Image 1 (cartoon, rainbow, N blue to C red):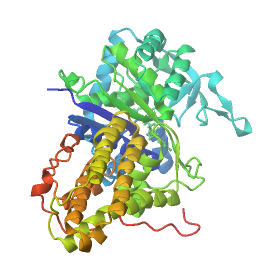
Image 2: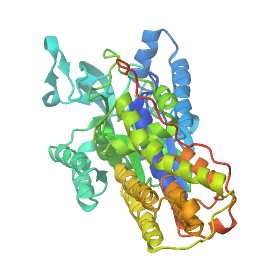
Image 3: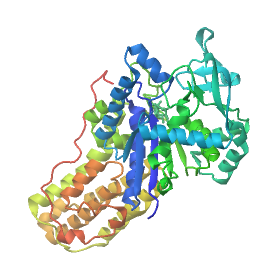
Image 4: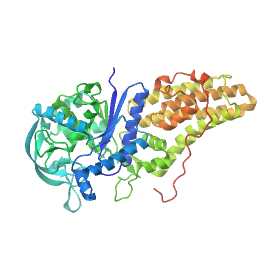
Length: 513
Ligand code: ME8
């Protein structure tokens, strides 16, 4: 059997509730997973929570709760977010699960067997927030003489006994990997950053901790737990069934979708661990941009951290999904606000696509009560269907395949606009009295176009696209890209009574977020 397309998101720290950045990443990865499934691939899609590490320990301490209780509670919110946003994951992994501990210990043993782990003493600048050590030369000065990491988080001088991974050994192999596989890291800007970082030389990496015990135990080293990033990255292997024989039926991963702040972990440390352990490398790491609120970073102190489920409630699950994928160029930072969401959703979904579908279906229900006959065709009909087919069958899938998610939405909208122009030009409502035969041909053409457009955009707005396809009577198992050219469905379909798919949204009142 062909290997499934294995796609992952980062696993989130459940030391707080999910925010819009987490939602964005899950939605983007979900669109890709759905696109692959609709293209006939078997897909395995994994997301989850990264529950170990000092940050979790400290948050639990601050809240006065047990760390495992904190992980249990918060992880549920992440899973609930995925469910509410229609994220089609196959596994929601928690790094506290036993099979994950087994996988982490197995990769540790494999790296040890290669001679890449040694015991030493770590002294250095550590950022608890990033769970990472930084070089002196990377630090910047913050207010009041506080030293900050390049991410702007405070660092502390830390000394402890630690196992080290011989990352320095892998510099040449990593550079060769980037050179020979230009698509290993995308987008290009992220790739260049990583290459510059590796070219500057790699220090060995501290990979165990003794100051707390909330983590995966280091095999044969009493008192040591693994550095949280060693275990976190290994979640991708756990999902494949590693170390059980046969894990390579799913491994290597095809795509790790992550944010730009953790590209170094995925594009440097992760392949180095895998090279050391003799495990195949993933095909691609995609570092998406950050989501800003009105151009500003989200932060508790600015009070602009919103619960993605509130946004979904207000603007619709598919409204939110569409906005994020259409408006944010995948790989670049993007900004959101209530007005921007309302404006985009109304323009594209409510007024263009939704209104078209609603007008056509209710007109047919009211005036025909059956599927329109072939009527009297016109070159304009073929011209429209050609244009729609070009968008739905060629441009949209090509953009998805290239992870150009906003371009996929744009290509889709070109098809929608063409339909609206066609409706205005053909004016079927006027033809009812003057030329009913021609009217039927026009309506029929529009039904054919609507089906293709609804199928094409399913990865982005799966719930609403499927509601429309239900109204059109398209069988649930005939909604893939390969089904697009089939126009015979119309002869045997039963149209359901129409109901609106995309309600028009109200602009927020003055002063609202
Ligand atoms: O980094 N916009 O977890 P995390 C877009 N546990 N994406 C954002 C974002 C924003 N404003 N803020 C965060 C971790 N993200 C680790 C990952 S993977 C083996 C371990 C993204 O909860 C971030 O870039 O801090 C990351 O990809 C994901 O959300 C989880 O972030």
